[in-house]
Image (tube, rainbow, N blue to C red; front, side, top):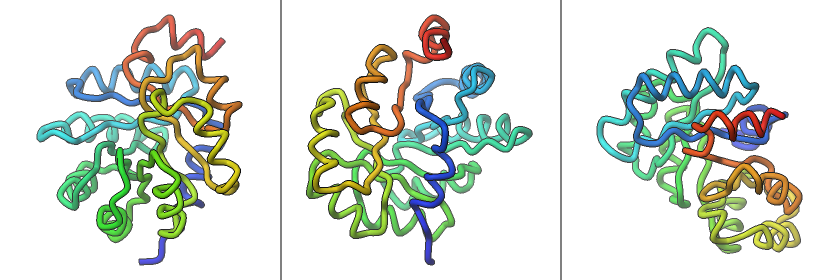
Length: 199
């Protein structure tokens, strides 16, 4: 099917700088933390489903997001089977740590926009050739802010979600370097860090 990946993520990420990632948590805690970040003004929530059984937390977050119309994404989607489980749990989109054209195709065929992961110029170029204008950069802290600055030269139209090891105090550094959104996990579970971002 024809799918405008960029248009979907342009809308999803508009006005947002932080995406909360709740990995491996019980459904009840996933919902509690999601509601906390939603109340603080952060709309983006990803629930990874790389391990069997994690779809329960995703489905719970999707249900909790329903009344507000927020979209919850499924993370660690690295196979067609993951795509099926993400769709069954009600995910609005899928995210992967790497770039797999078959997973991208399967996700789009299921009606789910896909955010592939990249770490090299070759992967950014391939993602662009596959029709993606948004990509996840992983692991962002290992690659560092200079990676984002370097990639904007040859790929000025690509937009990056920096994920992996970026802390609350580093958000501005990565945004200035060229990231559009920062994916953050356990650090956001700390009310002090959340307050810091709101402030």
